[in-house]
Image (cartoon, rainbow, N blue to C red; front, side, top):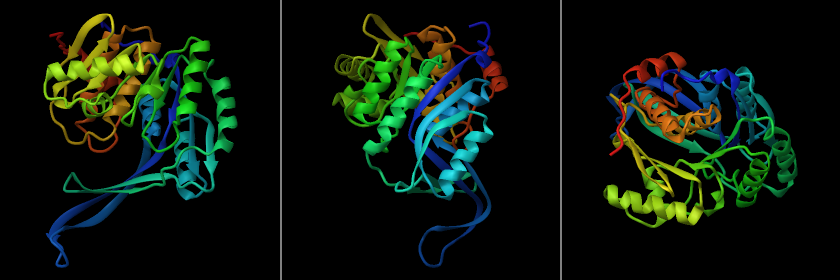
Length: 325
């Protein structure tokens, strides 16, 4: 890849579980007298988009356009989430507020430049039937306008089997690629997507195979493809890199790019965002995977659900070396 595509010409639709990531930053200088735990003196608070919102964040950071379909609560955290989406100047008209559903919030306490604790506040329940019709209406409107569709499934109830089937059907009708970051032990609900992007653990659980080495990894990947039927499967393997699998081609391996790993939070969001951008820009799956691997190597070197800039990506790509082995 000689140069990055012009992402400003690309617009993607992101559908999935929206969250607020809250960070409490502090210093640690003593152990609590009440229990053998560190005392974190909070000095700063920050809030960013999490889950599907972090996918949107990654797209916007790279200059692409985005629209989003999701659900939030109607309280202060839901309002904060929508405020952040509006600040990014994305189309958030597909975000529905449910007064009976709390906005998912993940609070991370950071002390001495490392995560000390994470507190999750959520109520996981399948999407209520009354919201299906307005969401289907949003899909019919937004899918034709998008260059690709990204499904960010965190298993929090937004992406039901019926909704996933509808997303795939509408996208196929309009000939739009669908890239899904899956959750759960059964991947058959993603049947017909262009690309699935599970991590190694998720792929092993879905295939029912304990992944111990390259051989069992490939075996698990082939079983996922046979059962779920995606056109391609990209399994992320942490420090071991990634492997791209397709029914009719040999495995394509990409070595990890990270020099230092501080926090893997949101790395999967970066991968699915870059795969969506690559495919929508006309890059091959191999080229898109190299791009995604490079971006992931950058964000894991940062604390929190971070994004990668165009400048960082361009600089890192200059000396990218990948191997197929």
